[in-house]
Length: 488
Image (cartoon, rainbow, N blue to C red; front, side):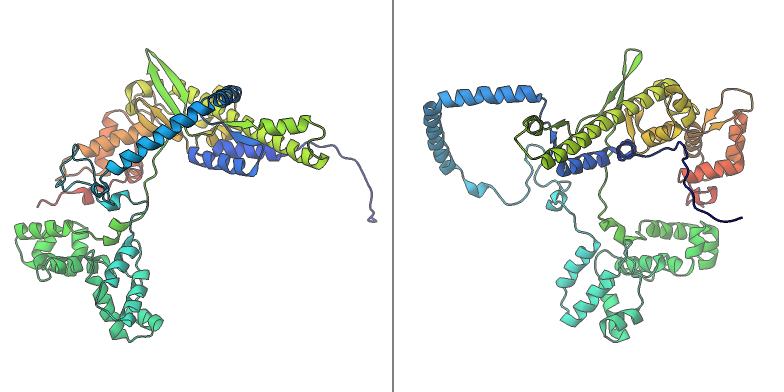
């Protein structure tokens, strides 16, 4: 068969993602803070977009500006006289102020708390950025009576501390990197370990605990002996074996364990500079009489409009050349599509939340124990949208309800069948009940996973031991042998 080139027409259908559609999908899955950043970025890039200030409409604001301009032109002399009087009064009042009463530091009003209250916030609490571990260590190093060469080695050691405060390089590596002897590098490690917080620059948890015990002058105590020789038994909570190995009584071992448990195995974490991120709900759900009202949280979201100035430019044929007008038209189309996409995003979130309230009415009325099993397909079929759209809407979105603040994905969970054939329960309600069972257990004899599964079985809930273990791990609850109290 001979190969040849030919032309032919072929008709086919395919889905094309236009830039506008891609933008709409992107806005749909953004969180609230990400949406604000995206809008601000678009305002900076698109000159046609404007942000409305305040609650006035553009027309009302323009009319008020014109009225104020007319009033200002008619009362020029009166305004100048009033301004001169104010200046004279303000000058005399400034002379009467005793500026020595104002200190360059934060001093709370004495009417709220007495000045000697130890709970008063320090000046560090109002800094825009709190000192981290490295800055705290560098500050101590700069005050130490060390030579410049020793401080250079100390700076290298501080730079190799992780967020837990552990030193992740050995003395040989320090000596090679700084050009000093291994003995000198080890001496500088000891110097850093003598600084605050106690236990800093350790190579392991055991060394960190021993450094803290030495700081408390307990380096030769039973607590130090347990940390040095029997830390594995302590991790397993085998306190009987510790008493047998040390030859001490149970009361002495228990007193030593209390000292160890008050230590901080990760001393660097108290200087962690991660800032707390507060959740701003995207939706509010209020109960009015016997109905639930859904309100979108538009606070903080920029209100956008298309600039009237550029509209006038397009109307005037001689205002700008053709190339400039084409550029303005493209930017106006982009701005209009952005405004439309944001409005569509808000409407979609509202529809999804309305459907969730309909399916989870018992949860909103009575709490987590009455959360029903729900999947994305149920909401998608209810509001006639695709499951992928529901997934994007519920991603990183939060709702304020009478039961608290929850992520929208919280309401979607699998079903657990009941043995008695009753209504299936949601996995979240099972987890909540599991948490309640463990909180009510005897800490001296904690319940095993099999025992918890038997409790669910008595309530007619089918739950295997491995499912109990999986839910327990998801809740961050330790196994039964590690939940046992320190009592002998």
